[in-house]
Amino acid sequence: MTATSNAAAGAATLMPLLIHLLRGASDLASVSATHAKLLKLGAASSVASSNHLLAAYGRCGCTALARHLFDGMRDRNVVSWTALMSGYASAGRPRAAVALLRAMARSGVPPNAFTFSTAASSCARLADAGLGRQVHARAEVAGYACDSVVSTALVDMYGKAGRVGDARAVFDAMPVTARNAVSWASMLSVYAQNALGHDAIQLFAELRTNSEDMAPNHFMLSSVVNACAGVGRLGIGKCIHGMVLHHGHEDNDVVAVALVDMYSKCGIYEYSKKVFDRINQPSVIPYTSIIVATAKYGLGRCALALFSDMVGRGVQPNSVTLLGVLHACSHSGLVDTGLQLLRSMRSEYGIDPCASHYTCAVDMLGRAGQLEAAFELADEAQVNGNDALMLWSSLLSACRNHKRLDLATMAGQKVSEFTQDVAGALVVMSNAYASAGQADDAAAVWSNMRRRGIRKDPGCSWIEIKDISYVFYAGVVSPAGSRAGEVMLLLDELEGKMREKGYKGRIGSARVLDADEEEDGNHHHQEGRGVMVGVHSELLALGLGLLVIPKGMAIRVMKNLRMCRDCHEAFKVISAIVEREFVVRDLNRFHHFRMGSCSCNDYW
Image (cartoon, rainbow, N blue to C red; front, top):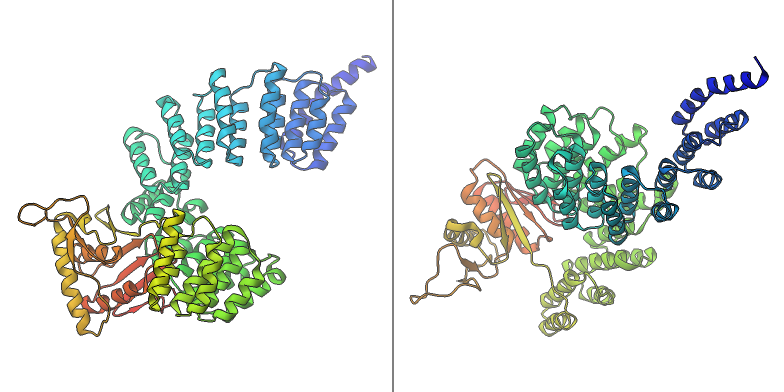
Protein backbone atom coordinates (compact mmCIF):
# COMPACT_ATOMS: atom_id res chain seq x y z
CA MET A 1 0.00 0.00 0.00
CA THR A 2 1.38 3.44 -0.96
CA ALA A 3 1.99 6.31 1.46
CA THR A 4 -0.85 8.24 -0.17
CA SER A 5 -3.32 5.44 0.29
CA ASN A 6 -2.17 4.98 3.91
CA ALA A 7 -2.76 8.67 4.61
CA ALA A 8 -6.19 8.49 3.00
CA ALA A 9 -7.08 5.47 5.08
CA GLY A 10 -5.87 7.22 8.24
CA ALA A 11 -7.89 10.32 7.44
CA ALA A 12 -11.00 8.23 6.81
CA THR A 13 -10.52 6.54 10.20
CA LEU A 14 -9.89 9.76 12.13
CA MET A 15 -12.56 11.92 10.49
CA PRO A 16 -15.62 10.45 12.29
CA LEU A 17 -13.77 10.68 15.62
CA LEU A 18 -12.80 14.33 15.05
CA ILE A 19 -16.31 15.26 13.96
CA HIS A 20 -17.64 13.56 17.08
CA LEU A 21 -15.21 15.61 19.20
CA LEU A 22 -16.37 18.81 17.49
CA ARG A 23 -20.02 18.05 18.20
CA GLY A 24 -19.33 17.75 21.91
CA ALA A 25 -16.77 20.55 22.24
CA SER A 26 -17.77 23.78 23.97
CA ASP A 27 -14.41 25.32 24.83
CA LEU A 28 -12.13 27.15 22.45
CA ALA A 29 -9.01 25.08 23.22
CA SER A 30 -10.69 21.82 22.23
CA VAL A 31 -12.21 23.26 19.06
CA SER A 32 -8.92 24.86 17.98
CA ALA A 33 -7.02 21.60 18.60
CA THR A 34 -9.53 19.61 16.54
CA HIS A 35 -9.42 22.25 13.81
CA ALA A 36 -5.62 21.90 13.67
CA LYS A 37 -5.90 18.11 13.30
CA LEU A 38 -8.39 18.50 10.47
CA LEU A 39 -6.04 20.91 8.72
CA LYS A 40 -3.17 18.44 9.12
CA LEU A 41 -5.29 15.72 7.57
CA GLY A 42 -6.30 18.04 4.73
CA ALA A 43 -9.96 17.56 5.59
CA ALA A 44 -10.82 21.01 6.97
CA SER A 45 -11.83 22.47 3.63
CA SER A 46 -14.79 20.21 2.98
CA VAL A 47 -18.21 21.80 3.43
CA ALA A 48 -19.25 19.22 6.03
CA SER A 49 -16.13 19.70 8.17
CA SER A 50 -16.33 23.48 7.89
CA ASN A 51 -19.96 23.44 8.97
CA HIS A 52 -19.10 21.44 12.08
CA LEU A 53 -16.30 23.87 12.86
CA LEU A 54 -18.64 26.85 12.38
CA ALA A 55 -21.14 25.38 14.80
CA ALA A 56 -18.40 24.58 17.34
CA TYR A 57 -16.87 28.07 17.20
CA GLY A 58 -20.37 29.49 17.56
CA ARG A 59 -20.99 27.44 20.72
CA CYS A 60 -17.77 28.88 22.16
CA GLY A 61 -18.93 32.41 21.37
CA CYS A 62 -15.97 32.94 19.01
CA THR A 63 -17.88 34.68 16.24
CA ALA A 64 -14.74 36.34 14.83
CA LEU A 65 -13.08 32.97 14.20
CA ALA A 66 -16.33 31.56 12.86
CA ARG A 67 -16.69 34.49 10.45
CA HIS A 68 -13.07 34.16 9.33
CA LEU A 69 -13.64 30.48 8.57
CA PHE A 70 -16.95 31.23 6.84
CA ASP A 71 -15.39 33.92 4.61
CA GLY A 72 -12.66 31.47 3.57
CA MET A 73 -15.06 28.73 2.45
CA ARG A 74 -15.16 28.12 -1.30
CA ASP A 75 -18.57 26.48 -1.10
CA ARG A 76 -21.32 27.29 1.40
CA ASN A 77 -24.68 25.62 1.80
CA VAL A 78 -27.72 26.46 3.93
CA VAL A 79 -26.14 24.72 6.93
CA SER A 80 -23.08 27.00 6.68
CA TRP A 81 -25.17 30.19 6.72
CA THR A 82 -27.47 28.96 9.47
CA ALA A 83 -24.58 27.80 11.67
CA LEU A 84 -22.96 31.25 11.53
CA MET A 85 -26.32 32.92 12.11
CA SER A 86 -26.92 30.73 15.17
CA GLY A 87 -23.45 31.60 16.46
CA TYR A 88 -24.18 35.31 16.21
CA ALA A 89 -27.52 34.85 17.96
CA SER A 90 -25.97 32.81 20.80
CA ALA A 91 -23.22 35.39 21.26
CA GLY A 92 -25.72 38.19 21.82
CA ARG A 93 -25.44 39.69 18.36
CA PRO A 94 -29.00 39.22 17.05
CA ARG A 95 -28.87 42.09 14.57
CA ALA A 96 -25.82 40.58 12.87
CA ALA A 97 -27.69 37.26 12.71
CA VAL A 98 -30.66 38.82 10.91
CA ALA A 99 -28.33 40.67 8.53
CA LEU A 100 -27.01 37.28 7.41
CA LEU A 101 -30.51 36.32 6.23
CA ARG A 102 -30.46 39.22 3.77
CA ALA A 103 -26.92 38.40 2.64
CA MET A 104 -27.94 34.78 2.21
CA ALA A 105 -30.73 35.78 -0.19
CA ARG A 106 -28.23 37.70 -2.32
CA SER A 107 -25.91 34.69 -2.43
CA GLY A 108 -28.56 32.50 -4.00
CA VAL A 109 -28.65 29.93 -1.18
CA PRO A 110 -32.28 29.35 -0.13
CA PRO A 111 -32.90 29.37 3.65
CA ASN A 112 -34.62 26.48 5.42
CA ALA A 113 -36.97 26.31 8.40
CA PHE A 114 -34.15 26.38 10.94
CA THR A 115 -32.72 29.49 9.26
CA PHE A 116 -36.02 31.35 9.55
CA SER A 117 -36.61 30.23 13.14
CA THR A 118 -33.12 31.42 14.11
CA ALA A 119 -33.74 34.79 12.44
CA ALA A 120 -37.14 35.14 14.15
CA SER A 121 -35.61 34.26 17.52
CA SER A 122 -32.98 36.95 16.96
CA CYS A 123 -35.74 39.50 16.33
CA ALA A 124 -37.38 38.31 19.55
CA ARG A 125 -34.20 39.18 21.45
CA LEU A 126 -34.32 42.64 19.91
CA ALA A 127 -38.09 42.95 20.57
CA ASP A 128 -38.17 44.49 17.09
CA ALA A 129 -41.53 43.83 15.46
CA GLY A 130 -40.59 45.76 12.30
CA LEU A 131 -37.55 43.59 11.63
CA GLY A 132 -39.56 40.54 12.65
CA ARG A 133 -42.22 41.34 10.05
CA GLN A 134 -39.52 41.32 7.37
CA VAL A 135 -38.42 37.85 8.47
CA HIS A 136 -42.06 36.76 8.57
CA ALA A 137 -42.61 38.04 5.01
CA ARG A 138 -39.53 36.17 3.73
CA ALA A 139 -40.77 33.00 5.43
CA GLU A 140 -44.18 33.43 3.77
CA VAL A 141 -42.60 33.81 0.32
CA ALA A 142 -40.37 30.78 0.89
CA GLY A 143 -43.33 28.68 2.08
CA TYR A 144 -42.08 28.12 5.63
CA ALA A 145 -44.44 30.41 7.57
CA CYS A 146 -46.71 27.52 8.57
CA ASP A 147 -43.86 25.25 9.60
CA SER A 148 -44.33 24.46 13.30
CA VAL A 149 -40.77 25.48 14.27
CA VAL A 150 -40.91 28.73 12.31
CA SER A 151 -44.44 29.59 13.44
CA THR A 152 -43.52 29.01 17.08
CA ALA A 153 -40.49 31.29 16.74
CA LEU A 154 -42.69 33.96 15.12
CA VAL A 155 -45.27 33.68 17.93
CA ASP A 156 -42.49 34.19 20.47
CA MET A 157 -41.04 37.10 18.49
CA TYR A 158 -44.32 38.99 18.22
CA GLY A 159 -45.04 38.33 21.88
CA LYS A 160 -41.72 39.73 23.06
CA ALA A 161 -42.31 42.78 20.86
CA GLY A 162 -45.69 43.32 22.54
CA ARG A 163 -47.68 42.47 19.39
CA VAL A 164 -50.02 39.96 21.01
CA GLY A 165 -52.61 40.15 18.23
CA ASP A 166 -49.99 39.31 15.60
CA ALA A 167 -48.72 36.43 17.72
CA ARG A 168 -52.24 35.00 18.02
CA ALA A 169 -52.80 35.43 14.27
CA VAL A 170 -49.69 33.34 13.54
CA PHE A 171 -50.79 30.73 16.06
CA ASP A 172 -54.30 30.54 14.60
CA ALA A 173 -52.87 30.21 11.07
CA MET A 174 -50.92 27.10 12.05
CA PRO A 175 -52.52 23.82 10.90
CA VAL A 176 -54.08 22.11 13.90
CA THR A 177 -51.83 19.10 13.34
CA ALA A 178 -48.75 21.37 13.45
CA ARG A 179 -49.55 22.77 16.90
CA ASN A 180 -47.37 20.81 19.25
CA ALA A 181 -46.66 21.26 22.95
CA VAL A 182 -43.98 23.88 22.22
CA SER A 183 -46.39 25.95 20.09
CA TRP A 184 -49.09 25.97 22.76
CA ALA A 185 -46.55 26.78 25.47
CA SER A 186 -45.21 29.68 23.42
CA MET A 187 -48.65 31.24 22.92
CA LEU A 188 -49.49 30.79 26.59
CA SER A 189 -46.21 32.47 27.49
CA VAL A 190 -47.03 35.42 25.22
CA TYR A 191 -50.26 36.08 27.10
CA ALA A 192 -48.63 35.65 30.51
CA GLN A 193 -45.67 37.91 29.65
CA ASN A 194 -47.96 40.65 28.37
CA ALA A 195 -50.11 40.69 31.52
CA LEU A 196 -53.08 39.08 29.77
CA GLY A 197 -53.69 36.45 32.37
CA HIS A 198 -57.36 35.89 31.57
CA ASP A 199 -56.49 35.20 27.91
CA ALA A 200 -53.81 32.71 28.96
CA ILE A 201 -56.28 30.88 31.19
CA GLN A 202 -58.86 30.81 28.38
CA LEU A 203 -56.30 29.47 25.90
CA PHE A 204 -55.28 26.73 28.32
CA ALA A 205 -58.94 25.77 28.62
CA GLU A 206 -59.08 25.52 24.80
CA LEU A 207 -56.02 23.27 24.86
CA ARG A 208 -57.58 20.95 27.42
CA THR A 209 -60.82 20.82 25.41
CA ASN A 210 -59.41 20.45 21.89
CA SER A 211 -56.20 18.52 22.54
CA GLU A 212 -57.11 16.12 25.30
CA ASP A 213 -54.39 13.70 24.24
CA MET A 214 -51.65 16.34 24.70
CA ALA A 215 -50.27 16.22 28.24
CA PRO A 216 -49.31 19.71 29.46
CA ASN A 217 -45.56 20.14 29.86
CA HIS A 218 -43.83 22.22 32.50
CA PHE A 219 -43.57 25.24 30.19
CA MET A 220 -47.35 25.32 29.69
CA LEU A 221 -48.08 24.79 33.36
CA SER A 222 -45.64 27.47 34.53
CA SER A 223 -47.13 29.99 32.08
CA VAL A 224 -50.68 29.33 33.26
CA VAL A 225 -49.62 29.47 36.90
CA ASN A 226 -47.93 32.83 36.20
CA ALA A 227 -51.14 34.00 34.52
CA CYS A 228 -53.17 33.04 37.60
CA ALA A 229 -50.68 34.96 39.75
CA GLY A 230 -51.06 38.08 37.64
CA VAL A 231 -54.86 38.19 37.88
CA GLY A 232 -55.21 36.68 41.35
CA ARG A 233 -57.16 33.57 40.25
CA LEU A 234 -56.53 31.33 43.25
CA GLY A 235 -59.16 28.72 42.43
CA ILE A 236 -57.82 28.02 38.96
CA GLY A 237 -54.26 28.22 40.27
CA LYS A 238 -55.02 25.41 42.71
CA CYS A 239 -56.45 23.31 39.87
CA ILE A 240 -53.28 23.84 37.84
CA HIS A 241 -51.23 22.83 40.90
CA GLY A 242 -53.21 19.60 40.89
CA MET A 243 -52.23 19.04 37.24
CA VAL A 244 -48.60 19.71 38.15
CA LEU A 245 -48.74 16.94 40.73
CA HIS A 246 -50.69 14.60 38.43
CA HIS A 247 -48.18 14.94 35.60
CA GLY A 248 -45.13 14.71 37.86
CA HIS A 249 -43.74 18.23 37.40
CA GLU A 250 -43.60 19.19 41.07
CA ASP A 251 -39.80 18.86 41.15
CA ASN A 252 -39.30 21.24 38.22
CA ASP A 253 -37.71 24.47 39.46
CA VAL A 254 -39.53 26.66 36.91
CA VAL A 255 -42.93 25.31 37.95
CA ALA A 256 -42.07 25.46 41.66
CA VAL A 257 -41.02 29.12 41.42
CA ALA A 258 -44.22 29.94 39.51
CA LEU A 259 -46.28 28.25 42.25
CA VAL A 260 -44.42 30.13 44.99
CA ASP A 261 -45.20 33.39 43.19
CA MET A 262 -48.82 32.45 42.46
CA TYR A 263 -49.76 31.52 46.01
CA SER A 264 -48.05 34.60 47.42
CA LYS A 265 -49.82 36.92 44.97
CA CYS A 266 -53.16 35.25 45.68
CA GLY A 267 -52.80 35.89 49.40
CA ILE A 268 -51.73 32.51 50.78
CA TYR A 269 -48.14 32.94 51.87
CA GLU A 270 -48.27 29.69 53.86
CA TYR A 271 -48.76 27.69 50.65
CA SER A 272 -45.88 29.56 49.01
CA LYS A 273 -43.60 28.56 51.86
CA LYS A 274 -44.77 24.93 51.68
CA VAL A 275 -43.97 24.75 47.96
CA PHE A 276 -40.56 26.33 48.56
CA ASP A 277 -39.75 23.98 51.44
CA ARG A 278 -40.29 20.99 49.14
CA ILE A 279 -37.56 22.11 46.74
CA ASN A 280 -34.58 19.86 47.49
CA GLN A 281 -31.73 22.20 46.61
CA PRO A 282 -33.14 25.66 45.90
CA SER A 283 -31.03 27.84 43.64
CA VAL A 284 -30.91 31.63 43.65
CA ILE A 285 -34.20 31.94 41.71
CA PRO A 286 -36.43 30.01 44.17
CA TYR A 287 -34.74 31.76 47.09
CA THR A 288 -35.31 35.15 45.47
CA SER A 289 -38.95 34.32 44.78
CA ILE A 290 -39.74 33.34 48.38
CA ILE A 291 -37.77 36.31 49.80
CA VAL A 292 -39.76 38.72 47.59
CA ALA A 293 -43.01 37.02 48.63
CA THR A 294 -42.05 37.24 52.31
CA ALA A 295 -41.20 40.92 51.88
CA LYS A 296 -44.61 41.73 50.39
CA TYR A 297 -46.26 40.26 53.48
CA GLY A 298 -44.19 42.50 55.75
CA LEU A 299 -42.39 39.54 57.31
CA GLY A 300 -39.06 41.33 57.39
CA ARG A 301 -37.27 39.14 59.90
CA CYS A 302 -38.43 35.97 58.11
CA ALA A 303 -37.04 37.37 54.85
CA LEU A 304 -33.72 38.11 56.56
CA ALA A 305 -33.65 34.57 57.98
CA LEU A 306 -34.24 33.12 54.50
CA PHE A 307 -31.49 35.33 53.12
CA SER A 308 -29.11 34.18 55.85
CA ASP A 309 -29.97 30.54 55.12
CA MET A 310 -29.38 31.14 51.42
CA VAL A 311 -25.94 32.67 51.94
CA GLY A 312 -25.10 29.97 54.49
CA ARG A 313 -25.77 27.31 51.86
CA GLY A 314 -23.33 28.98 49.52
CA VAL A 315 -26.00 30.29 47.12
CA GLN A 316 -24.80 33.61 45.69
CA PRO A 317 -27.52 36.29 45.73
CA ASN A 318 -28.17 38.40 42.66
CA SER A 319 -29.32 41.99 42.30
CA VAL A 320 -33.01 41.03 42.52
CA THR A 321 -32.44 39.01 45.70
CA LEU A 322 -30.88 42.00 47.42
CA LEU A 323 -33.72 44.21 46.19
CA GLY A 324 -36.17 41.77 47.77
CA VAL A 325 -34.33 41.95 51.10
CA LEU A 326 -34.37 45.75 50.95
CA HIS A 327 -38.13 45.65 50.31
CA ALA A 328 -38.50 43.42 53.36
CA CYS A 329 -36.64 45.95 55.48
CA SER A 330 -38.71 48.79 54.02
CA HIS A 331 -42.07 47.13 54.72
CA SER A 332 -41.05 46.13 58.25
CA GLY A 333 -39.38 49.32 59.47
CA LEU A 334 -35.92 47.71 59.65
CA VAL A 335 -34.18 50.88 58.53
CA ASP A 336 -30.72 50.31 60.03
CA THR A 337 -30.53 46.76 58.64
CA GLY A 338 -31.60 47.96 55.21
CA LEU A 339 -29.07 50.78 55.09
CA GLN A 340 -26.30 48.43 56.23
CA LEU A 341 -27.19 46.06 53.39
CA LEU A 342 -27.19 48.89 50.84
CA ARG A 343 -23.73 50.05 51.96
CA SER A 344 -22.25 46.51 51.97
CA MET A 345 -23.63 45.20 48.65
CA ARG A 346 -20.43 45.82 46.74
CA SER A 347 -17.98 44.57 49.37
CA GLU A 348 -20.02 41.56 50.56
CA TYR A 349 -21.60 40.31 47.33
CA GLY A 350 -19.80 42.09 44.50
CA ILE A 351 -23.00 43.80 43.34
CA ASP A 352 -23.12 47.55 42.73
CA PRO A 353 -26.35 49.18 43.94
CA CYS A 354 -28.51 50.26 41.01
CA ALA A 355 -31.31 52.81 40.79
CA SER A 356 -33.89 50.28 42.07
CA HIS A 357 -31.87 49.62 45.23
CA TYR A 358 -31.53 53.33 45.97
CA THR A 359 -35.23 53.92 45.28
CA CYS A 360 -36.16 51.14 47.69
CA ALA A 361 -33.85 52.53 50.37
CA VAL A 362 -35.29 56.04 49.91
CA ASP A 363 -38.78 54.55 50.19
CA MET A 364 -37.70 52.74 53.37
CA LEU A 365 -36.51 55.98 54.98
CA GLY A 366 -39.65 57.78 53.85
CA ARG A 367 -41.98 55.16 55.34
CA ALA A 368 -40.11 55.44 58.65
CA GLY A 369 -40.56 59.22 58.64
CA GLN A 370 -36.84 59.95 58.19
CA LEU A 371 -37.58 62.34 55.36
CA GLU A 372 -34.47 64.52 55.55
CA ALA A 373 -32.26 61.40 55.35
CA ALA A 374 -34.41 60.17 52.46
CA PHE A 375 -33.83 63.41 50.54
CA GLU A 376 -30.07 63.19 51.16
CA LEU A 377 -29.98 59.62 49.84
CA ALA A 378 -32.09 60.62 46.83
CA ASP A 379 -29.54 63.29 45.92
CA GLU A 380 -26.70 60.80 46.43
CA ALA A 381 -28.32 58.24 44.12
CA GLN A 382 -28.18 60.55 41.06
CA VAL A 383 -30.72 58.51 39.08
CA ASN A 384 -32.30 59.58 35.81
CA GLY A 385 -35.33 58.90 33.63
CA ASN A 386 -38.10 56.61 34.88
CA ASP A 387 -35.94 55.57 37.83
CA ALA A 388 -35.84 59.17 39.01
CA LEU A 389 -39.62 59.49 38.57
CA MET A 390 -40.19 56.41 40.77
CA LEU A 391 -37.80 57.69 43.42
CA TRP A 392 -39.31 61.16 43.71
CA SER A 393 -42.87 59.79 43.50
CA SER A 394 -42.06 57.53 46.44
CA LEU A 395 -40.71 60.47 48.41
CA LEU A 396 -43.73 62.57 47.53
CA SER A 397 -46.06 59.88 48.87
CA ALA A 398 -44.05 59.60 52.11
CA CYS A 399 -44.12 63.38 52.60
CA ARG A 400 -47.87 63.41 52.16
CA ASN A 401 -48.36 60.53 54.62
CA HIS A 402 -46.22 62.29 57.22
CA LYS A 403 -47.91 65.65 56.52
CA ARG A 404 -44.69 67.42 55.48
CA LEU A 405 -46.12 69.77 52.88
CA ASP A 406 -42.83 71.70 52.62
CA LEU A 407 -40.92 68.61 51.51
CA ALA A 408 -43.89 67.33 49.46
CA THR A 409 -43.74 70.54 47.44
CA MET A 410 -40.04 69.99 46.72
CA ALA A 411 -40.64 66.40 45.63
CA GLY A 412 -43.68 67.48 43.62
CA GLN A 413 -41.57 69.98 41.69
CA LYS A 414 -39.18 67.18 40.74
CA VAL A 415 -42.08 64.97 39.60
CA SER A 416 -43.67 67.76 37.54
CA GLU A 417 -40.54 67.91 35.38
CA PHE A 418 -41.47 64.55 33.84
CA THR A 419 -43.96 64.14 31.01
CA GLN A 420 -45.02 60.47 31.28
CA ASP A 421 -46.54 58.22 33.96
CA VAL A 422 -46.89 61.07 36.43
CA ALA A 423 -50.66 60.95 37.00
CA GLY A 424 -50.47 58.99 40.25
CA ALA A 425 -47.79 61.23 41.72
CA LEU A 426 -49.67 64.42 40.80
CA VAL A 427 -52.82 63.06 42.45
CA VAL A 428 -50.76 62.46 45.60
CA MET A 429 -49.56 66.06 45.38
CA SER A 430 -53.13 67.31 45.04
CA ASN A 431 -54.20 65.21 48.03
CA ALA A 432 -51.29 66.60 50.07
CA TYR A 433 -52.50 70.15 49.40
CA ALA A 434 -56.08 69.17 50.19
CA SER A 435 -55.06 67.56 53.49
CA ALA A 436 -53.31 70.80 54.45
CA GLY A 437 -56.43 72.79 53.66
CA GLN A 438 -54.93 74.41 50.55
CA ALA A 439 -57.87 73.74 48.23
CA ASP A 440 -56.75 76.29 45.61
CA ASP A 441 -53.36 74.61 45.23
CA ALA A 442 -55.03 71.19 45.00
CA ALA A 443 -57.34 72.47 42.27
CA ALA A 444 -54.35 73.98 40.44
CA VAL A 445 -52.70 70.56 40.26
CA TRP A 446 -55.81 69.06 38.66
CA SER A 447 -56.07 72.00 36.29
CA ASN A 448 -52.45 71.49 35.25
CA MET A 449 -53.15 67.79 34.67
CA ARG A 450 -56.10 68.59 32.40
CA ARG A 451 -54.07 71.16 30.50
CA ARG A 452 -51.30 68.62 29.87
CA GLY A 453 -53.76 65.86 28.99
CA ILE A 454 -52.68 63.70 31.94
CA ARG A 455 -55.29 61.16 33.02
CA LYS A 456 -55.17 58.93 36.08
CA ASP A 457 -55.90 55.24 35.54
CA PRO A 458 -59.08 54.35 37.41
CA GLY A 459 -58.62 52.36 40.58
CA CYS A 460 -60.30 48.98 40.68
CA SER A 461 -60.53 45.99 43.01
CA TRP A 462 -61.67 42.47 42.37
CA ILE A 463 -62.73 39.48 44.39
CA GLU A 464 -62.89 35.86 43.25
CA ILE A 465 -66.00 33.89 44.21
CA LYS A 466 -66.40 30.33 42.92
CA ASP A 467 -63.80 30.89 40.18
CA ILE A 468 -65.54 34.06 38.94
CA SER A 469 -63.93 37.49 39.33
CA TYR A 470 -66.10 40.46 40.27
CA VAL A 471 -64.38 43.75 39.38
CA PHE A 472 -65.43 46.95 41.15
CA TYR A 473 -64.55 50.57 40.39
CA ALA A 474 -64.75 53.38 42.90
CA GLY A 475 -68.37 54.20 43.66
CA VAL A 476 -69.94 51.66 41.28
CA VAL A 477 -71.70 48.77 43.01
CA SER A 478 -73.36 47.30 39.90
CA PRO A 479 -70.81 44.43 39.48
CA ALA A 480 -72.50 42.85 42.50
CA GLY A 481 -75.50 42.22 40.22
CA SER A 482 -78.73 41.32 41.98
CA ARG A 483 -77.05 41.66 45.37
CA ALA A 484 -75.98 45.28 44.84
CA GLY A 485 -78.76 46.57 47.08
CA GLU A 486 -77.68 44.22 49.85
CA VAL A 487 -74.09 45.43 49.54
CA MET A 488 -75.20 49.05 50.00
CA LEU A 489 -77.36 48.17 53.01
CA LEU A 490 -74.55 46.17 54.59
CA LEU A 491 -72.03 49.00 54.18
CA ASP A 492 -74.58 51.43 55.67
CA GLU A 493 -75.01 49.14 58.65
CA LEU A 494 -71.25 48.68 59.08
CA GLU A 495 -70.67 52.41 58.97
CA GLY A 496 -73.01 52.87 61.92
CA LYS A 497 -71.25 50.15 63.92
CA MET A 498 -67.87 51.66 63.04
CA ARG A 499 -68.91 55.01 64.45
CA GLU A 500 -69.86 53.29 67.68
CA LYS A 501 -66.25 52.03 67.77
CA GLY A 502 -64.95 55.59 67.41
CA TYR A 503 -64.33 55.58 63.63
CA LYS A 504 -64.16 59.20 62.43
CA GLY A 505 -64.16 58.63 58.68
CA ARG A 506 -67.02 57.92 56.30
CA ILE A 507 -67.20 55.00 53.92
CA GLY A 508 -70.01 56.65 51.95
CA SER A 509 -73.66 55.83 51.56
CA ALA A 510 -75.17 58.34 49.16
CA ARG A 511 -76.81 56.60 46.21
CA VAL A 512 -77.24 57.97 42.71
CA LEU A 513 -77.59 56.48 39.22
CA ASP A 514 -74.94 55.13 36.94
CA ALA A 515 -73.94 57.73 34.36
CA ASP A 516 -75.40 55.68 31.47
CA GLU A 517 -78.72 54.97 33.24
CA GLU A 518 -81.94 56.96 32.89
CA GLU A 519 -84.44 57.48 35.69
CA ASP A 520 -87.94 56.25 35.16
CA GLY A 521 -90.98 58.34 35.89
CA ASN A 522 -91.00 57.35 39.56
CA HIS A 523 -87.37 58.45 40.05
CA HIS A 524 -86.28 54.91 40.82
CA HIS A 525 -83.57 52.87 39.15
CA GLN A 526 -83.06 49.21 38.47
CA GLU A 527 -81.70 47.17 41.33
CA GLY A 528 -78.02 46.41 40.91
CA ARG A 529 -77.23 49.52 38.86
CA GLY A 530 -76.53 51.91 41.76
CA VAL A 531 -73.54 54.03 42.60
CA MET A 532 -72.32 54.71 46.13
CA VAL A 533 -70.64 58.09 46.01
CA GLY A 534 -67.19 58.19 47.59
CA VAL A 535 -66.89 54.48 48.31
CA HIS A 536 -63.57 53.04 47.20
CA SER A 537 -63.53 49.86 45.15
CA GLU A 538 -61.95 47.63 47.80
CA LEU A 539 -64.80 48.37 50.23
CA LEU A 540 -67.39 47.43 47.61
CA ALA A 541 -65.55 44.17 46.92
CA LEU A 542 -65.37 43.52 50.65
CA GLY A 543 -69.12 44.12 50.97
CA LEU A 544 -69.88 41.44 48.39
CA GLY A 545 -67.40 39.08 50.01
CA LEU A 546 -69.03 39.48 53.40
CA LEU A 547 -72.40 38.58 51.88
CA VAL A 548 -71.29 35.59 49.84
CA ILE A 549 -68.16 34.00 51.34
CA PRO A 550 -68.96 31.73 54.31
CA LYS A 551 -67.80 32.76 57.74
CA GLY A 552 -64.55 31.04 58.69
CA MET A 553 -63.01 31.64 55.26
CA ALA A 554 -60.67 34.58 54.69
CA ILE A 555 -61.90 37.21 52.23
CA ARG A 556 -59.23 38.06 49.65
CA VAL A 557 -59.39 41.33 47.70
CA MET A 558 -57.00 42.42 44.92
CA LYS A 559 -56.41 46.09 44.06
CA ASN A 560 -54.53 47.69 41.16
CA LEU A 561 -53.45 50.78 43.14
CA ARG A 562 -52.08 51.44 46.60
CA MET A 563 -54.61 51.15 49.42
CA CYS A 564 -55.39 54.52 50.98
CA ARG A 565 -55.13 55.22 54.70
CA ASP A 566 -58.90 55.68 55.14
CA CYS A 567 -59.70 52.29 53.61
CA HIS A 568 -56.86 50.69 55.55
CA GLU A 569 -58.35 52.00 58.81
CA ALA A 570 -61.84 50.95 57.75
CA PHE A 571 -60.71 47.38 57.02
CA LYS A 572 -59.10 47.15 60.46
CA VAL A 573 -62.26 48.29 62.24
CA ILE A 574 -64.58 46.07 60.15
CA SER A 575 -62.36 43.01 60.77
CA ALA A 576 -62.96 43.46 64.50
CA ILE A 577 -66.71 44.09 64.11
CA VAL A 578 -67.45 41.03 61.96
CA GLU A 579 -64.62 38.88 63.41
CA ARG A 580 -63.37 37.92 59.94
CA GLU A 581 -59.94 37.79 58.31
CA PHE A 582 -59.32 39.96 55.24
CA VAL A 583 -56.33 39.79 52.90
CA VAL A 584 -55.79 42.73 50.53
CA ARG A 585 -53.18 42.75 47.80
CA ASP A 586 -52.46 46.28 46.65
CA LEU A 587 -49.84 47.67 44.30
CA ASN A 588 -47.06 47.47 46.91
CA ARG A 589 -47.74 44.65 49.33
CA PHE A 590 -50.20 42.46 51.20
CA HIS A 591 -52.29 43.52 54.18
CA HIS A 592 -53.65 40.81 56.46
CA PHE A 593 -56.41 42.22 58.67
CA ARG A 594 -57.47 40.35 61.78
CA MET A 595 -59.37 41.51 64.88
CA GLY A 596 -58.72 45.20 64.34
CA SER A 597 -55.05 45.04 63.36
CA CYS A 598 -53.04 44.66 60.15
CA SER A 599 -49.90 42.66 59.47
CA CYS A 600 -48.21 45.72 57.97
CA ASN A 601 -48.15 47.59 61.31
CA ASP A 602 -48.77 50.70 59.17
CA TYR A 603 -45.47 50.26 57.23
CA TRP A 604 -47.11 50.33 53.84
